[in-house]
Image (cartoon, rainbow, N blue to C red; front, side, top):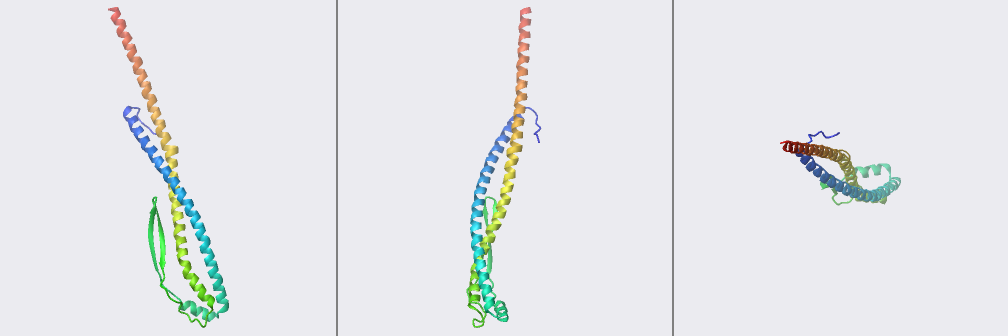
Length: 210
């Protein structure tokens, strides 16, 4: 889309100011884009490592649970699972970074032993219970980081579109409009100079004739 303008000096000054602002905004957005990219890939590495640790812990917990289920009677296991319930306090804190708001979760679980009878259950169930409680902080941390990755990717895409709009549309259009006005003003100035020279020559000829 080309910018339609009137070829005059006032419009030329306005477009030059607008071009300077657009260039400044483009530089700021490019810097933001680069910083977002750095933060994004750093968070990707951190999230990947955390996911591997969390998945390893969950897998190990599941194996202990399978052993506990094999060593405990079905009814005793169901009773133990029904009796063992504990409420925790989940808190959410919103963190802001480079126009990206991402939640950070934390869970406070009160200390205490499981409520089932230890005589009727396997020691593997105790281990499963302990590891399950220990896995909650990592799981919540992983949820927060993956949510932050999603939001950061959205912000990166928005920033990329704005950078491209400035770099490939607005800036070239402004530069083209400025050059067009400068060319037309230059033509007008040359035409005025030629007209003045002709008038001057005509005045000289009349002076000689007198």
